[in-house]
Image (cartoon, rainbow, N blue to C red):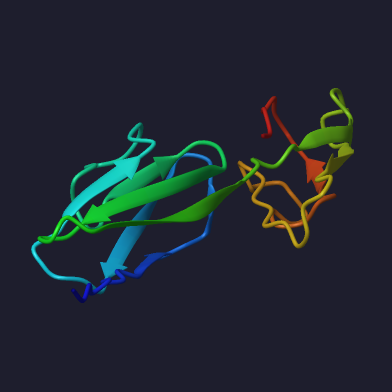
Length: 147
């Protein structure tokens, strides 16, 4: 008596493997077997569907997703993919005058520890020497909060 063993390789991919907190990512399972297939994704929390080929995941922490696929012959296979979450940046205002004379100038400075090439956008920009640098000079003729 001869037996045939059917292998069913599964490839799991994603449109991104690194995302920001709360960002959506498309997971995709590709399989080589005998259709039709049934899909089971886990962990199921934050997935748009758990029984489809390509769910969207909303990721809040680094998560390993697993898909288990069964084909028409009952063969099963599974594979995993890890989606890494990039932590939100920590920004500290380390220097800034809170009170200046009416025609005075305040030096503002922000620290962006661990962030390479940060994109800066001070708001409101009017009265600043530049709104896109870490340490602008602010001059104000009236009371104003700068964030």
